Image (cartoon, rainbow, N blue to C red):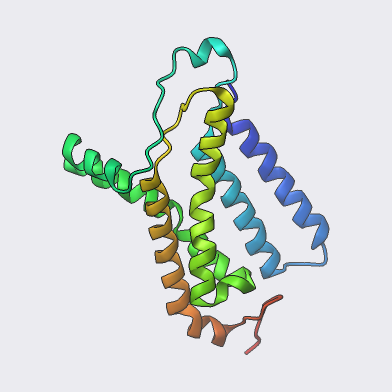
Length: 189
């Protein structure tokens, strides 16, 4: 079984080394934010897809989930079958996972700086983890992780919250940091 800590450690070290080599002239806020975003995305993908059961003997003992493509069916079953606090916790953690993405992408991607562009990017970003789990499930022959359209909806809601925070803070960010399509630098006093 492939475990996540090894890939997280190797990926984080590679991100830090790449940015340290590229920006060795001193502290660069943009490089720091890109590095942080890369490590966050790596951690997010690892948390949502690992551990990967590669041995056939392990796959036989894992629970197999059916992909759910009907909107809100998982949410209804969580609220009906689980204690209320547990169901709210499951919803909350899925929303919280993508709030940083909703804040950082409009800050760094020119396409996501407008509301319409941000919504398009957010929808694509929310689809990626579920598509990845679906493809891995097809390759392995079993869906060892739940694949659900409800997760996409909740990830998108988290992205929207993060984007909302960015667009609310944007006037303040424009005063303290010069935002442009290519870079931003800290303004002096």
